[in-house]
Image (cartoon, rainbow, N blue to C red):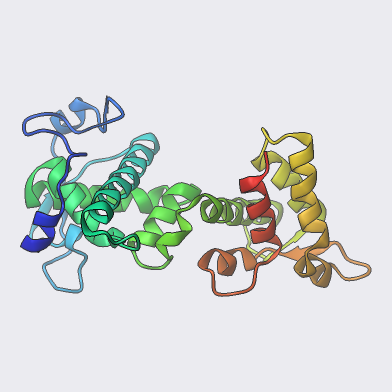
Length: 258
Protein backbone atom coordinates (compact mmCIF):
# COMPACT_ATOMS: atom_id res chain seq x y z
CA UNK A 1 0.00 0.00 0.00
CA UNK A 2 2.83 2.39 0.85
CA UNK A 3 4.53 1.67 -2.45
CA UNK A 4 1.29 2.28 -4.29
CA UNK A 5 0.84 5.63 -2.51
CA UNK A 6 4.34 6.66 -3.49
CA UNK A 7 3.62 5.84 -7.14
CA UNK A 8 0.57 8.08 -7.10
CA UNK A 9 1.64 11.69 -7.44
CA UNK A 10 -1.75 13.33 -6.90
CA UNK A 11 -1.24 16.58 -8.76
CA UNK A 12 -4.98 16.37 -9.40
CA UNK A 13 -5.78 16.59 -5.68
CA UNK A 14 -6.46 19.63 -3.55
CA UNK A 15 -3.50 21.26 -1.82
CA UNK A 16 -3.34 20.75 1.96
CA UNK A 17 -5.95 22.89 3.63
CA UNK A 18 -7.83 23.62 0.41
CA UNK A 19 -11.30 22.37 -0.44
CA UNK A 20 -11.43 19.59 -3.01
CA UNK A 21 -12.41 21.03 -6.38
CA UNK A 22 -12.99 19.85 -9.92
CA UNK A 23 -12.86 22.22 -12.87
CA UNK A 24 -12.65 25.14 -10.49
CA UNK A 25 -15.79 24.33 -8.50
CA UNK A 26 -16.06 22.60 -5.09
CA UNK A 27 -16.81 18.90 -5.35
CA UNK A 28 -19.30 19.24 -2.50
CA UNK A 29 -20.92 22.26 -0.80
CA UNK A 30 -18.98 23.47 2.24
CA UNK A 31 -22.20 23.41 4.28
CA UNK A 32 -22.46 19.67 3.75
CA UNK A 33 -19.98 18.99 6.55
CA UNK A 34 -21.62 21.55 8.88
CA UNK A 35 -24.98 19.73 9.08
CA UNK A 36 -26.16 17.89 12.19
CA UNK A 37 -23.98 14.76 12.34
CA UNK A 38 -25.60 11.42 11.56
CA UNK A 39 -23.77 8.11 11.80
CA UNK A 40 -24.16 4.67 10.24
CA UNK A 41 -22.55 1.33 11.04
CA UNK A 42 -19.31 0.62 9.19
CA UNK A 43 -18.88 -2.57 7.17
CA UNK A 44 -16.13 -4.00 9.36
CA UNK A 45 -12.42 -4.58 8.84
CA UNK A 46 -12.44 -7.97 7.12
CA UNK A 47 -10.22 -8.38 4.05
CA UNK A 48 -13.32 -9.13 1.99
CA UNK A 49 -14.62 -5.60 2.61
CA UNK A 50 -13.47 -3.10 -0.05
CA UNK A 51 -10.73 -0.84 1.28
CA UNK A 52 -12.84 2.28 0.84
CA UNK A 53 -15.53 0.77 3.15
CA UNK A 54 -13.26 -0.98 5.64
CA UNK A 55 -13.72 0.27 9.20
CA UNK A 56 -15.15 -0.74 12.56
CA UNK A 57 -17.72 1.14 14.60
CA UNK A 58 -19.61 4.08 13.13
CA UNK A 59 -18.85 6.40 10.24
CA UNK A 60 -20.40 9.77 9.62
CA UNK A 61 -23.16 9.73 7.01
CA UNK A 62 -23.46 12.20 4.15
CA UNK A 63 -26.62 12.41 2.09
CA UNK A 64 -25.48 13.18 -1.43
CA UNK A 65 -27.55 14.53 -4.29
CA UNK A 66 -27.48 12.97 -7.74
CA UNK A 67 -25.65 16.03 -9.08
CA UNK A 68 -22.95 15.72 -6.41
CA UNK A 69 -22.60 12.02 -7.11
CA UNK A 70 -22.19 12.61 -10.84
CA UNK A 71 -19.56 15.31 -10.23
CA UNK A 72 -17.56 12.95 -8.03
CA UNK A 73 -17.81 10.16 -10.59
CA UNK A 74 -16.56 12.42 -13.38
CA UNK A 75 -13.81 13.84 -11.17
CA UNK A 76 -12.56 10.37 -10.21
CA UNK A 77 -12.51 9.15 -13.83
CA UNK A 78 -10.64 12.30 -14.88
CA UNK A 79 -8.11 11.98 -12.07
CA UNK A 80 -7.55 8.31 -12.87
CA UNK A 81 -6.95 9.07 -16.55
CA UNK A 82 -4.49 11.82 -15.66
CA UNK A 83 -2.56 9.62 -13.26
CA UNK A 84 -2.43 6.73 -15.73
CA UNK A 85 -1.11 9.07 -18.43
CA UNK A 86 1.63 10.28 -16.08
CA UNK A 87 2.65 6.75 -15.09
CA UNK A 88 2.64 5.59 -18.72
CA UNK A 89 5.05 8.37 -19.63
CA UNK A 90 7.34 7.75 -16.66
CA UNK A 91 7.38 3.96 -16.96
CA UNK A 92 7.19 3.78 -20.78
CA UNK A 93 4.28 1.39 -20.47
CA UNK A 94 1.42 2.31 -22.79
CA UNK A 95 -0.70 -0.53 -21.43
CA UNK A 96 -0.53 0.52 -17.78
CA UNK A 97 -3.97 0.63 -16.14
CA UNK A 98 -4.71 1.39 -12.50
CA UNK A 99 -7.57 -0.79 -11.20
CA UNK A 100 -10.46 1.50 -10.35
CA UNK A 101 -11.01 -0.01 -6.89
CA UNK A 102 -7.36 0.65 -5.94
CA UNK A 103 -7.29 4.12 -7.43
CA UNK A 104 -10.64 5.02 -5.86
CA UNK A 105 -9.18 4.46 -2.39
CA UNK A 106 -6.14 6.59 -3.10
CA UNK A 107 -8.31 9.28 -4.66
CA UNK A 108 -10.59 9.37 -1.62
CA UNK A 109 -7.67 9.41 0.79
CA UNK A 110 -5.96 12.27 -1.00
CA UNK A 111 -9.04 14.27 -1.92
CA UNK A 112 -10.81 14.14 1.43
CA UNK A 113 -7.79 13.87 3.73
CA UNK A 114 -6.62 10.71 5.46
CA UNK A 115 -7.96 7.16 5.87
CA UNK A 116 -10.77 8.12 8.26
CA UNK A 117 -12.24 10.69 5.92
CA UNK A 118 -11.65 8.38 2.97
CA UNK A 119 -13.81 5.63 4.51
CA UNK A 120 -16.42 8.18 5.57
CA UNK A 121 -16.78 9.53 2.04
CA UNK A 122 -16.25 6.12 0.47
CA UNK A 123 -19.27 4.85 2.40
CA UNK A 124 -21.32 7.90 1.43
CA UNK A 125 -20.40 7.62 -2.24
CA UNK A 126 -21.07 3.86 -2.29
CA UNK A 127 -24.60 4.45 -0.98
CA UNK A 128 -25.14 7.27 -3.46
CA UNK A 129 -23.94 5.07 -6.34
CA UNK A 130 -26.52 2.47 -5.39
CA UNK A 131 -29.26 5.09 -4.98
CA UNK A 132 -28.64 6.69 -8.35
CA UNK A 133 -27.68 3.57 -10.29
CA UNK A 134 -30.64 4.18 -12.59
CA UNK A 135 -28.35 6.73 -14.24
CA UNK A 136 -26.16 5.04 -16.85
CA UNK A 137 -22.93 6.90 -15.98
CA UNK A 138 -23.34 6.19 -12.27
CA UNK A 139 -24.18 2.55 -12.96
CA UNK A 140 -21.13 2.06 -15.18
CA UNK A 141 -18.86 3.52 -12.48
CA UNK A 142 -20.45 1.33 -9.79
CA UNK A 143 -20.12 -1.86 -11.83
CA UNK A 144 -16.52 -1.07 -12.76
CA UNK A 145 -15.75 -0.31 -9.11
CA UNK A 146 -17.22 -3.66 -8.06
CA UNK A 147 -15.40 -5.53 -10.83
CA UNK A 148 -18.65 -6.53 -12.55
CA UNK A 149 -17.82 -4.63 -15.73
CA UNK A 150 -14.47 -4.22 -17.53
CA UNK A 151 -13.10 -0.71 -17.21
CA UNK A 152 -12.61 -0.69 -20.98
CA UNK A 153 -16.33 0.04 -21.18
CA UNK A 154 -15.50 3.55 -20.03
CA UNK A 155 -14.54 4.55 -23.52
CA UNK A 156 -16.59 6.53 -25.95
CA UNK A 157 -18.15 3.63 -27.76
CA UNK A 158 -18.40 1.41 -24.69
CA UNK A 159 -20.13 4.06 -22.64
CA UNK A 160 -22.61 4.64 -25.44
CA UNK A 161 -23.43 0.93 -25.40
CA UNK A 162 -23.92 1.04 -21.62
CA UNK A 163 -26.18 4.07 -21.90
CA UNK A 164 -28.24 2.37 -24.58
CA UNK A 165 -28.54 -0.74 -22.44
CA UNK A 166 -29.74 1.33 -19.53
CA UNK A 167 -32.16 3.42 -21.54
CA UNK A 168 -33.69 0.51 -23.41
CA UNK A 169 -34.12 -1.44 -20.18
CA UNK A 170 -35.95 1.52 -18.67
CA UNK A 171 -38.11 1.80 -21.79
CA UNK A 172 -38.90 -1.92 -21.52
CA UNK A 173 -40.06 -1.54 -17.92
CA UNK A 174 -42.05 1.60 -18.70
CA UNK A 175 -43.94 -0.18 -21.47
CA UNK A 176 -44.42 -3.40 -19.47
CA UNK A 177 -45.86 -2.14 -16.20
CA UNK A 178 -42.54 -2.14 -14.39
CA UNK A 179 -41.55 -5.63 -15.52
CA UNK A 180 -38.42 -6.49 -17.51
CA UNK A 181 -39.41 -8.63 -20.49
CA UNK A 182 -36.16 -8.51 -22.47
CA UNK A 183 -38.03 -7.48 -25.61
CA UNK A 184 -38.89 -4.23 -27.38
CA UNK A 185 -40.45 -3.64 -30.74
CA UNK A 186 -38.10 -2.51 -33.45
CA UNK A 187 -40.12 0.69 -33.69
CA UNK A 188 -39.64 1.30 -29.95
CA UNK A 189 -35.90 0.78 -30.32
CA UNK A 190 -35.71 3.17 -33.24
CA UNK A 191 -37.75 5.74 -31.32
CA UNK A 192 -35.44 5.51 -28.32
CA UNK A 193 -32.30 5.79 -30.45
CA UNK A 194 -33.68 9.02 -31.94
CA UNK A 195 -34.32 10.37 -28.44
CA UNK A 196 -30.90 9.27 -27.18
CA UNK A 197 -29.03 11.14 -29.93
CA UNK A 198 -31.05 14.32 -30.52
CA UNK A 199 -28.10 16.27 -31.92
CA UNK A 200 -27.14 13.80 -34.63
CA UNK A 201 -27.37 15.08 -38.18
CA UNK A 202 -30.01 13.55 -40.45
CA UNK A 203 -27.33 11.60 -42.33
CA UNK A 204 -25.77 10.29 -39.12
CA UNK A 205 -29.13 9.22 -37.70
CA UNK A 206 -29.96 7.46 -40.96
CA UNK A 207 -26.70 5.50 -40.62
CA UNK A 208 -27.52 4.53 -37.03
CA UNK A 209 -31.03 3.36 -37.89
CA UNK A 210 -29.71 1.51 -40.93
CA UNK A 211 -27.32 -0.41 -38.67
CA UNK A 212 -30.36 -1.63 -36.74
CA UNK A 213 -32.21 -2.64 -39.88
CA UNK A 214 -29.40 -4.81 -41.26
CA UNK A 215 -28.19 -6.37 -38.02
CA UNK A 216 -28.81 -10.16 -37.95
CA UNK A 217 -29.82 -10.03 -34.27
CA UNK A 218 -32.73 -7.77 -35.11
CA UNK A 219 -33.78 -9.82 -38.14
CA UNK A 220 -33.60 -13.11 -36.25
CA UNK A 221 -35.55 -11.77 -33.29
CA UNK A 222 -38.20 -10.04 -35.37
CA UNK A 223 -39.16 -12.92 -37.62
CA UNK A 224 -41.43 -12.65 -40.65
CA UNK A 225 -44.58 -11.57 -38.79
CA UNK A 226 -43.24 -9.99 -35.61
CA UNK A 227 -41.58 -6.68 -34.82
CA UNK A 228 -39.91 -7.56 -31.50
CA UNK A 229 -36.16 -7.63 -30.92
CA UNK A 230 -34.10 -8.70 -27.95
CA UNK A 231 -32.23 -5.97 -26.10
CA UNK A 232 -30.63 -8.15 -23.44
CA UNK A 233 -27.70 -8.55 -25.84
CA UNK A 234 -26.77 -5.00 -24.88
CA UNK A 235 -25.39 -6.17 -21.55
CA UNK A 236 -23.21 -8.89 -23.02
CA UNK A 237 -22.11 -6.60 -25.82
CA UNK A 238 -21.00 -4.05 -23.24
CA UNK A 239 -19.01 -6.76 -21.46
CA UNK A 240 -17.37 -7.70 -24.75
CA UNK A 241 -17.95 -11.46 -24.42
CA UNK A 242 -20.16 -11.95 -27.50
CA UNK A 243 -20.14 -10.91 -31.12
CA UNK A 244 -21.50 -7.41 -31.76
CA UNK A 245 -25.29 -7.21 -31.55
CA UNK A 246 -27.67 -4.64 -32.95
CA UNK A 247 -26.94 -2.55 -29.85
CA UNK A 248 -23.19 -2.42 -30.23
CA UNK A 249 -23.50 -1.91 -33.97
CA UNK A 250 -25.77 1.07 -33.48
CA UNK A 251 -23.66 2.36 -30.61
CA UNK A 252 -20.44 2.21 -32.59
CA UNK A 253 -22.11 4.00 -35.47
CA UNK A 254 -23.60 6.60 -33.15
CA UNK A 255 -20.27 7.20 -31.43
CA UNK A 256 -18.45 7.90 -34.66
CA UNK A 257 -21.12 9.46 -36.85
CA UNK A 258 -21.40 13.23 -36.96
